[in-house]
Image (tube, one colour):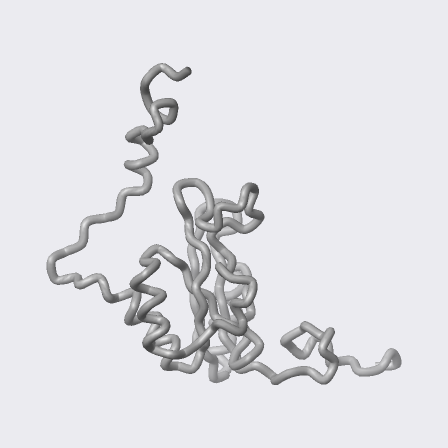
Length: 179
């Protein structure tokens, strides 16, 4: 038996509710910014699929001990379900407003994920040398990691060897042991 408060009564305490509260929107904000961004990604030709999202201190997949909470696709068939179809993306975004989205890499694009400091240094050097770069995204995080930088690149296509998974030049050079 419980003491009549919190989880023992079948209701949630005020602290978890406060931690999950959403910021109030300005009247001019119609709430479609997220949807507009998703549609812009799809319009750029990058297929999207819905992904898990945080629910309190756990993952929306409800898997006990989820190894990557709120950072994985919802479906195991996400690569075949990913799409650039405007209608489907709008339905996903409206039916699950808290859902994250992932892009299907290897089909149209690849992503190089690096620590934020290294990514900033690399981007600065590339721009200084006049190298044309594709889209770059930054995610900030508290803690020793300090965030990540994502470099979006065109894919090099489907490899002949289906077991091959490196989406970069690292697996191609050197080609022989002598090199």
